Image 1 (cartoon, rainbow, N blue to C red):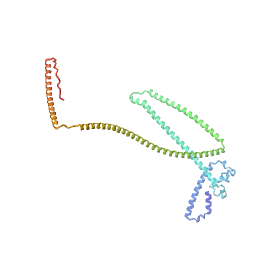
Image 2: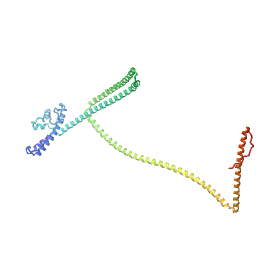
Image 3: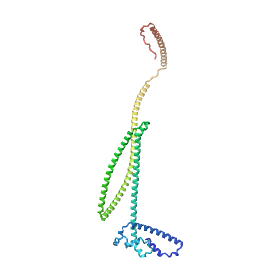
Image 4: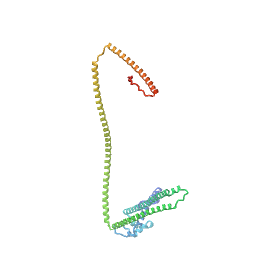
Length: 384
């Protein structure tokens, strides 16, 4: 396409000596872009033809020829047409590719580049996996060495440090090394058995893979086309299921939001119900207290009414004495109080005399050394 455009443009253009400087610069820039495009196409074609089997270059029927009118000799001329500038326009037109053929070549080259990138990616992943495995193995070995060093210091080194100046028996060290060696041998045997089992499993998987490949070689292109059709149908069904799944996920998300909202409302209502229940219980207790206080107040009121009635009755029956009687009673009351005071004073004097006589009597008892019976005396009434 680039050559056709350049040829048509070169036929329509005037001679170069008639161009101005700016036109010459534009022409040089355009030719540079065209040369870069042709160079890229040439590199793509060379990579493509370098991978083609020479048998594919033999003449084929017209319906099956990928390159229209292109024989083996013309193909060799096509590869060297950039080097030979003296080839005629008729021969060049015979070896030119159509747009469909160029698209096919570019598509195949793109697929090849994708395959190469995929292979490079797989190789890089293998290298990365190997590096990760090496790092993990190194870390495991480092942990094992640290553990072995710690155990040796714990079992042997610490006792050697504690017993300075005393020769450590070589038998203990040899026994320790032999125990560790037996442990390593046991671990090696286990790993060997595991490796053998993995090899057997690998061999079985390789045989199964080989059988599947042999069975796949017996398949025809019609079967592959049928498989492609079924694959496309299944992909459509998978897309439909994915759409349904997405719709169900959205519905489930909305339902979950509504459920969370109702859960929050239920939690709020439950807390409010608990608060109301506790408040109702407190109100009931308050009502019971009020009822008990009401009963108590009623009883006190009835008692107060009874006392009030009795006092009112006494007040209604009360008669005030005469003044002379009141004065006489008051005088007799004062005389009685004075007589009581006098008698209390006499009792105090008698008690003091009794105490004095008791002390004298006790002294006489101590002096005679005999137990004398004191006559029974009447206990005088004491003053309150």
